Image (cartoon, rainbow, N blue to C red; front, side, top):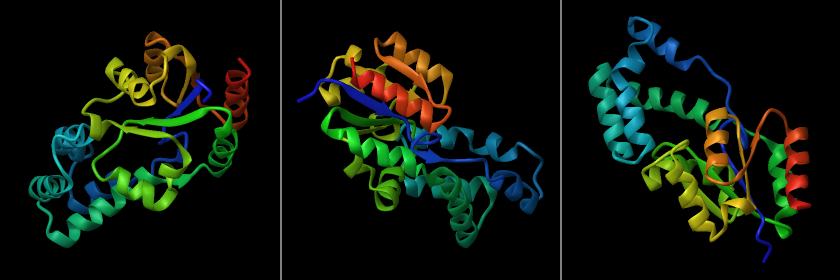
Length: 201
């Protein structure tokens, strides 16, 4: 088996996730000042991203803190997931499928409780890569060095054999500090070229 690994982020890389403006719309709908949703729910988002609360608790906290009834809570979460899941980056996903015989693809993603089930159903990432490492399942997110260490452990790979691709500079810097190669995602053309260079090493 080839020792070279390509580890990809999801949001902003394998998924296109532009800001949909759903939070300001909800603040306007509820008559709340701008920034209120983050102020009231910031710790809920953090807990959901490290798996210290489950989806039921997320719903309960949102309903309580924003004073929403059950249908409104469901609508709020539907808007959250619509932005979170975005649309698939079809070109890059198709490319990642082709070099699988030459490398070991994986995912390392800062995530939210419920992401695995939804992304598996929509995008079949479980069939695309060898390992998926979600922050809400391991209890720690990028750029914490433990996230990169755990990814290597799951892959049984050395950091120096891994190319990490993300759209957030601090995560690239952290991957490099962990001993990996790093590539900042800006477009598919440059990213595919960088993967080819890694595979040619």
